Structures are given as structure tokens and as C-alpha cells.
Image (cartoon, rainbow, N blue to C red; front, side):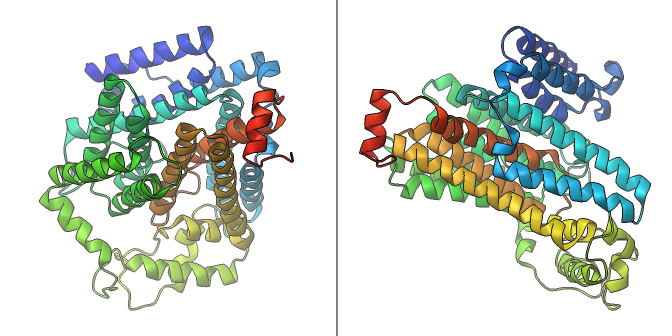
Length: 449
């Protein structure tokens, strides 16, 4: 009953806030509904069988249309990695004409298009630092909810927790990858929050998310979370851009974070994480290292299908390029288990190039935003952009071992970077410069004196 009350209160509050206070809450609600995934939860019979995400999407679209004059300055093509994102979508659409299964490819193209559309609309809505905070809060809330469900459910399949995923991330590894980036965002907001109750909220969120990762027991998500947190903490400690007692806080967070991790981790989790370093391919049974064989087969397949083979192209043709002596679980059709090779085998060499260019462009605009924020002395927003970078890195690490080309969370991360670039870089470049701002710019050598 608690889950139903939470869902209804969130849904109704989201609509009210979006219409009567701020349109950005429509996207925040969209994030929450994505994680609630009401049609697939055990409490689904307690709520009407409706397309809740569709109604929220229509709300987002309606508000953008109504408020178009307000948001028209947020130009989509001003964001370099958005241009690459649209190019990837175009290549995916073209692949329909030679896909191994055109009907299935068309279905997933439709889903992919809707993801890109909602991200594009959300970009229009998120044009201030406060609105970006709300969007990030929505993501953290959704990740917390998955952690809450994991806490309620416990492990359901041996040493793993299955069955709590979302529409596009139904399996354990997929949902773990979806919530892992929220850890570093929770850490950032815990650090910069001044009120004790805000810090407490982000501690609770972080603990539930971390506990969820332990219960789900995904090696890739654990590695992703570790890399993103290390990236953020490294910059927090070594950056010349420092808040008062920042290095001491970095040490405090590191020590207590490790203590917390040791408390949450059980024997099953530790034993599974030990297998991360197992790189030996076993010919008698399938192991995690067998994925490297899949990747090699995908590379060989691309030579015969340079433009890709459409949705799940590797599943259709990959077995033809597998070594005969490698155990593949007694199944011919296997998933390639890597977004990089998924992209290569579905939309070819050009598609992989565009996909990599999209991510590299996102990194470049994030870096440009950070440089300008540092020059302006805006330390909190500087580290906000860094935390978003770390979140994106987390998902990139996870997707290296999963098929996540069309994953919503990937494009949310790109959205957050795009919004930060618009708010902290593009708008600053075009805004009228006051006398005080002119002196600041001159002092930091951002304009000629």
C-alpha cells in the first residue's frame, strides 16, 4: 500500500507543480514514473492500467508548446553533442532498410525516437541552475526508489536480485547500471548542502542506492560506481578550486564511504566482485571473460556488414564468427554485451564513429562549462558539472559490458550536460555584461582589456 500511496502522491504532485508552478516538474515527474514503472510492479493491480509515462510525455510537450516564447532561446542545435545524437538517430532510421528484422527494428526505432524527443523537450524546459537541480533531484529520487524496492524485496535469484527493473532495463545488470550514476550526484549534493536535513536526505538516498547495488550484485555497475566516485573525489581533493576545508571533507567522505561500503557488502557480493579480474576464457562453460570472444566476433562480423545489420544484428549473425571451441551456453543467438559493439553491429562503422563523437563532444562542452565557471569563481556549479561528468562516466563504464545504445539514462546524462552547457556557458556568453561582470572578466582574462 505504501508504494501505491507514494506513486499517486508523486504523480498528482508532479502534475500540479508542472502546471501551476514550474514546467520543469513535468520532466521531473517523467523521471520518477520511469523508475516507478507501475505496470510491472507487484502493486500494479492496485492502480488503473494506464500509460502513465505517455500522459507525462504529453504534458511535457504541451507545456513546451504553450511556453514556446519563453523557451525558444534554448536552441537544440547549439549543443554539439545533440547534433551528433540526432545523426546517430538518423543512421538508426536508415538501418531499417537493410535490418535483419525490419519490423522489430522499426519498433525499437520508435522507442529510440521517443527517448530523443523527450530529452529534446526537457532541454527546452531546463534553462536555469535551479531547474537543473530539480531534474537531478528527480533522477536521484527515482534511483532511491529502486533502492527502496530492492530493500523491500531482497535477493530473489540465488546471489542476485531480479525483477525490479524498468521498461528498457528489465534485467539486473541493466537496472544496476541505471541507478549507479546517482551515487555520485547524491554525494555532491550532500557535500554542498548547508542545512542538516538536506544532508540527511542525500545520505539516506545514497545508502539505499548503494544497498540496492549490493543486492543486485552487478559487477559492471559496481565498477562503474567506483570509477565515478574516484573521479569526483580525485578532483575534489586535488583541484586548485577549493571550498573551505574541502580536502578535509574529501578525506572524511572517503573514509566513511569505505566504512559504509564494508558494512553493506556481504560475502556473496564480495565473492562476485572478485571475479571481475577473471580474464580467462573457459572452453567448458560460459564466464564473464567469454564476452571478449563476443567482441572479437562482432569486429569480424562488421567486416561483412560495414553498415550494420539493424536491431540485434549480432544476435542474428554473430554465431557465424564465434570460435567453435568456445562455450556459448548452448545457444546460437547471443547478445554481444557491449554498447560499443552493439552500435558497430547495428549501425556500422559510421554509427560507431558518430556515437563516440557524441560522447566526446559531451565531455568537451562539460569541460568548457567548468573552465568558465572556475574563471567566474562559481565553485558549487563547477563541481555540479563535474558530478554530472562523473555520472556520465559511470554509465559509460556500465554500458561497456551491456547493450545500452538506446538506454534512457544514457541520454538523460547527455541532457544534464547539455543543460549545464546552456546555463553556464551559452547564456553567459550572450547575456549583457554589467560593469561588475566586465571587471571580473578582465581580471580573469576572459576578454581583452
